[in-house]
Length: 136
Image (cartoon, rainbow, N blue to C red; front, side, top):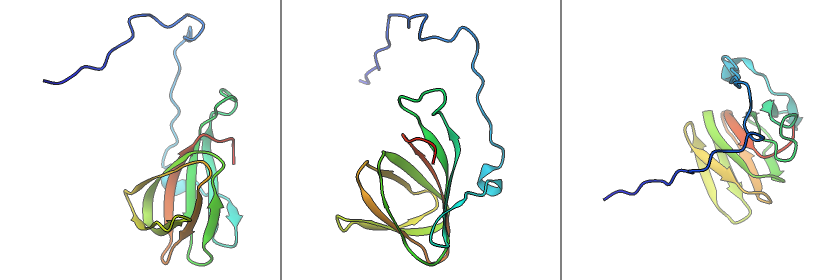
């Protein structure tokens, strides 16, 4: 027999609820039209598409695109928690524990705060990320 997730019986306080409807944001064709700026070497590009830093400065969530072209690997130490999904191409992703993965479109990664990660690619790759960080 299955179980049910309990639902709160208490209504949220009026202070926490918005008195007017909140609209979602749409970023049409961002995967193909957004061009992240160069961040390292001549082949690593990263840029936020959106950040909640202005509306939630105590715990901002940012998201955007990361592109790596063939060439110099990118070594990165995470100062925040991040999730990443590979959209196009491929990456070789490794960490200081010795773990190494050949990542392809559809693969999802969790990078904990403090992890030291190396990104490499032979053909190039594009990924979408989201993390609890301020605007990059």
